[in-house]
Image (cartoon, rainbow, N blue to C red):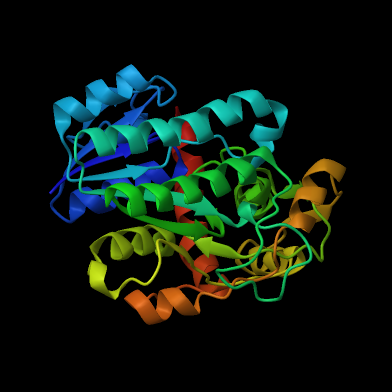
Length: 316
């Protein structure tokens, strides 16, 4: 199967490309940035692609004719609030361009990464799939629109559009500007310099997920028989620890780490607008979703990888 990944230079994209290549797929990566150094060892075709440019999107998809597009290109929540106009152009315009090109070239499937940022405050706990979506960030607004656009293209043009609403994702890479970055930074900075001052309150709690589970969810949903799916967009969940509980887990694995809290009003307000936990019953019932990692299992697997990453960076 031939696969194109947009936004492939980001946190999710690099791990997704590795997972797809390991499964034997012919994978093409694309981004406005050049190929990341971490991917130079893999024989992956790389394409410069600005998703805000419809002519470029048409050119790449028309030439490659992939079976599946994993559309990851987006500006995340914290960075998105610094430049809402650019966020709208990339997230909203880029998604529309990809959908249009998929329709035009009859691409079989488009996989879309949505987010807990689509939700707003005042929702049930845990939050089910079908609730009023009232996000407080441009990132969230554009992801709601992406979900709705995809559902429109599925109904109007029979495009096989599928999406997961990701919790905050944690992996052995440097964070990329998301509001959930306080969690991975606890690990990175504790190992790099022995201390970290988190920009949230210790009782802050949002849904989180270890990257291997997130990648597996994307791949499993893409491979699920279409007749089993009762919807296009699915919540997926793993664990929802308080920030203080993450700090305790890091201190267990990194003795002597000093983690303190100094809430940043803007980012804390975004966290406060997100749900504490997600109800992923539909994903479990329709395609058998099941996370493999809880907080402690993630910490045990993650800390050695980040220690290695920091060691590699320090040696350069």
